[in-house]
Image (tube, rainbow, N blue to C red):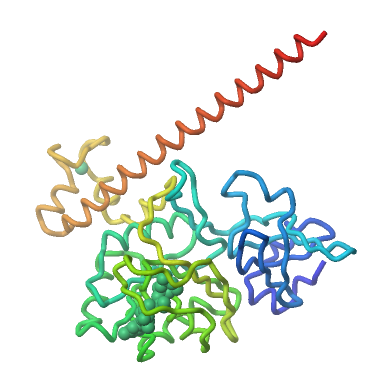
Length: 352
Ligand SMILES: Nc1nc2c(ncn2[C@@H]2O[C@H](COP(=O)(O)OP(=O)(O)OP(=O)(O)O)[C@@H](O)[C@H]2O)c(=O)[nH]1
Ligand SMILES: [Mg+2]
Ligand SMILES: [Zn+2]
């Protein structure tokens, strides 16, 4: 086993908890990229290519290795390198799979910060930003909003303040990779040992911003529209090491993000609204026409913007829908297992 004190591993985000979870005869590695054939890894001794061991080839999307994961790697005497296990994640950014209903899709593992990027070539789309923030909170990481392309807005600072008022508890930065404005402020999120994942629509300037922090053109960037309708430049989730710092996790642009199962992600995103709701006269207040509704009062007083209230309701409805569909899928799978089991029992009994 490699020594836990190794500085390179620590900069990559290795911890004592991960060292304790490492099976014997395995070395720790961080997944920098996953493809069909296997994955690229970062180890104490540098980059390494590995194939996936049988334990990782199951159908559970949450059990598969994802960029950012810490894994246990075995180097076989005859040459092959295999990933034997995914070590416990300290955060997991998950959305509903856009292709397989009622299934999760992992976007990034072990991020400490999720940088929610939005280009200031257009006004901040607060509903979409809140959706990303909910996902980020739910992941276990700290969300940060990064308004990119500040050079394209005449009132970037005003837009930043306005956005900040709408997302309590979440820092908001306005940056420009073109002029360098604000970029250094983000360095605290990629200090040694820390990982920041960049998410947001295609063309928001995620890879350009990553390159600015990396100090080199490490990631491909593209001439594209940032309304999410253009070509996607980044096609795989990728880790990059920040010189003298931690790790950046660049992701392909997301057209939309459906919530996956949410627990406290929404409560944290809408902490101010939830606080009001907790003070309503009725415990089960629908925040509609009930007397003594603090939420309606705040709306009437203009303290709570209608937009934010509606965004809260919409995401709550979506979260309930996801939970119901997920339950239905679990029930269907349990039924299938039961049928398979009883068939097996019958064929045993029918044997001579
Ligand atoms: N004016 C200006 N343009 C920028 C800035 N940052 C990025 N761009 C431009 O925005 C376009 C898209 O940048 P990318 O970094 O490829 O965007 P991305 O978010 O990585 O896109 P995907 O990889 O498709 O998700 C490019 O043409 C960049 O030159 C900036 O700070 N100011
Ligand atoms: Mg990109
Ligand atoms: Zn109420």
